[in-house]
Each structure stands twice: as C-alpha cells, then as structure tokens.
Length: 284
Ligand code: PAF
Image (cartoon, rainbow, N blue to C red; front, side):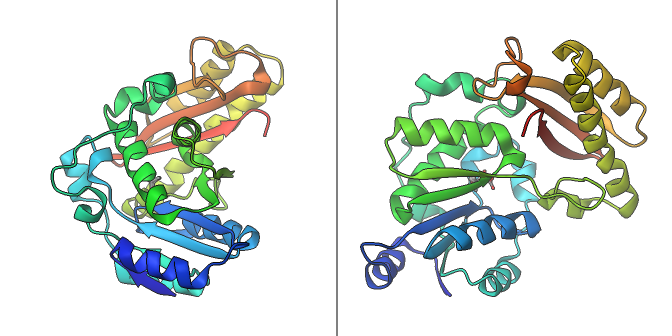
C-alpha cells in the first residue's frame, strides 16, 4: 500500500499502476476509521481494480471549532487497518494541498441547495458547502470511476450525488448501507466517546426509527409515524432528541414527503453529550 501526503505522488502512482481498463474506487474519509469505513473499502475492493482512500480532516465542514479540535486523529492505526484491507493508495493530504494559500473559492450549490437545507443543513450552517468543496477537490486529484459513501450520512450522500451531476464528474456514486452493532447502534467514530451504558442508551435511537418505520409500513401517515417514533425516544433513558423527522428521499423535503416508498426517517439525538445521527429508509 502506498501512502502519501501529496497529489504529485498520487499522479505518479496513478500513471504507473493504472491502465485503460482500471477501475479506481474511491473512499473519502476523515480518518478515525471503524468497521463502517472498512465496509465501504470492502465494497470498493469487490467492484474495482484499485482502491484509493483519502484521510483528510476538512476544516471547512466544521461549523464548531471545538468539534474540529476534538476530532480524533489516529493516522498510524488507520494506515494499518487500510493495509490489512488491501487498499492500494492512501492519500492523507495537508490542508495546503487541498486549499492552496489564497484559494478561497467555493462551489456554487444554488441548483441543489434545497438538498442541503433542513435536517443537518439547518443545524450545521456551512457544513455541506465544506463537504462539496473538499470532495470536489479530492475527486479532481483522485479521478476515480466510483466513489463509495455511507447511507448513515444520507443527506450528505444526496448532496454529493447532486454535486457530482452538476460538476459533471463522470463517476458512479455508490451509497452503502449503514453498518450496525448487534444492538442496532449505527457504527460511528463518535461511539468511541460513549460509555458502555451510553452505547446501550444510544441503540434506542435505532429502535425508535424502527418503531416509526413499522408505523409507516402499517399505513400510518408521516405525522403519526413520527409521533410514534418520538414517543418511543422520549421514554428512552439517557437519550435527548434533537430532531425526529421524515423526509423525501429524493428532495430531502420534510414538508412534502410524498409516497411512503420515498420516506426516510431521520433522527439526531444526544447521549452523554455526544451528538449522534441515524436514519432508516421505509422501503430499502
Ligand atoms: O463523511 C465524511 O467523513 C466526510 O464528510 C467526507 C465525505 C470524507 C468529506 O470530508
């Protein structure tokens, strides 16, 4: 496995080790890798001839300076995990590589801004602008044929699909199902900040989502399905709801949710002061 902090090395590797029929699968990450990330890598390994992973903690997508400061950095452990998965190239660029001094340009998101509003977009101003900026810059370096993203960050997946279309990157975006602990808790780097008890409490987020999903499948309307999920969450010990909402999977609208086949149920909640997000599709 080759690792490098600059795009020059990547370009050299790419021109030596890939040919006309190579299929490069790309997994962008911010490091502190867990089984959910490794599952993305495994999917890429199955479908592509080479797999490239980036590790870059993107300052532009943090609206909270504390969150950025406390973001876990475990580069050596991450490299070992990726080598073990048979990753071909890990790009861990410096901030200057991605954002050269004086380059403050940002992508124009106006044609898909609606996807980045509501849900996480409302709670984290500027977050999705930072995400599209960094991913477009990484795609320009890596030039993959496929990019793998987890459905746990569902809204991010929708925003990035739209960015890829708008910027005319000719790649497939592959949305990969959320990986869960046996309790149902969605795998996330933030779970490491929870005690064992906290992790047990956090698994009730998934139960609440399942409760709302069962209600939707039973024929309840979206308000009723949400009310049932919320009621479950409110009775859950150690979990403080931030939002519990149904949105349309194509538009991310929470006001016009459309047909139940298009519903995704979203939840953000705090457990032991740690902010967690999760979602389930009503029909997956
Ligand atoms: O999901 C993430 O880890 C990040 O938002 C991403 C896609 C790597 C961009 O920094």
